[in-house]
Amino acid sequence: MHAVIRNYSGKGAKKLIDIVEKNKAEVEKLMRPIKGFVSYSLVRTSKGGFSVTVCKDKAGTDESDWIAKNARETGAAKPTISEGSVILHLNPQPLPP
Image (cartoon, rainbow, N blue to C red):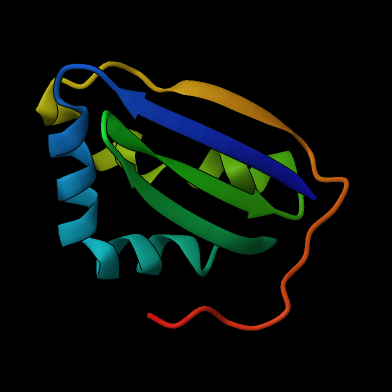
């Protein structure tokens, strides 16, 4: 599996996270059909937020960036990206909505 963390901070980052939150259904429509999709989380922070995407391979995580494709009008800087091979993934129970 492959994971990518996209960290959004600075000018426009909070607005960017707000836009993604308002478009949850559209984000889900994009993410679920991605070949090898495992999980996606969006986390709000005091400076903006970050997303964590896990797919079976890097091709899936590369395809998964809804924000880059749809919410750049906020003027937010490109995210800081950390990515790599997953060495441990625990998923005991689905989280409540």
